[in-house]
Amino acid sequence: MIKAPLYNVKGEKTGEIELPEAVFAVPSNDTLLHQVYVAISANLRSPIAHTKDRAERAGSGKKPWRQKGTGRARIGQVRAPHWRKGGIVFGPTKDRNFSKEANRKMRQKALRIALSEKLRGDKVRFVEGFAFEDRKTKSFSALLAGLGIGAGKRTLVGFAREERETERMSRNIDRVENVLSENMSVYDLLQSEYLVVTKQSVAMFAERFSGKEETSVKN
View (tube, rainbow, N blue to C red):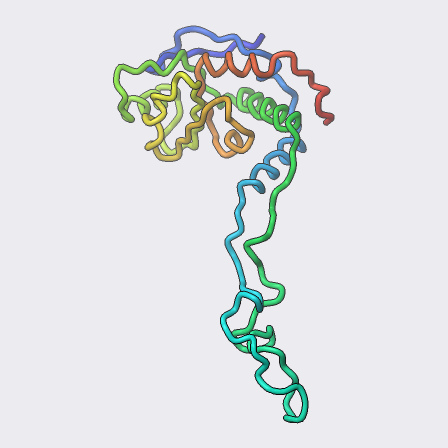
């Protein structure tokens, strides 16, 4: 087991916490991290740019003039792409699909690698629990300061399901995001510099990933 400092809500060190090696001591694998991160990012992406083809453009479907005998080029409808205000042929459309696949084993191992990298970089802070005397944002800001996390640092706060009442304390702090620890992803971790979790979240990670073998996904 790995040991790390444990803090209270005042940012004071109160002891140490034992961390499961299956979660916080996984060897690095930048290739897997990148693959899973790209997949999650792609799945979050939604198409914005959209051009109208000839079926979506406004205008009559009537043939402007007869096919032959006028001396002019033949034309079928005013919405033809080569006409002014006509449809666009190869423009971007909202029907594009950016999704990518990453199976469950890949996502789980990438999450454990990301957690291990945070710990190796001294970017994780473990708190006994979010038992504050009040429910004010100022109190949570004081906790972050006591943990050595300066203002403006991108920070991810992981809540256990029983701790969701204190979620609103951190959601108004600049550059601080919060997420249920059971829903935490590689994307969340890599988007943030620091991670703050409680003993309950660590216990959840230990139970969720207990018995995981490093050979589940090949490097």
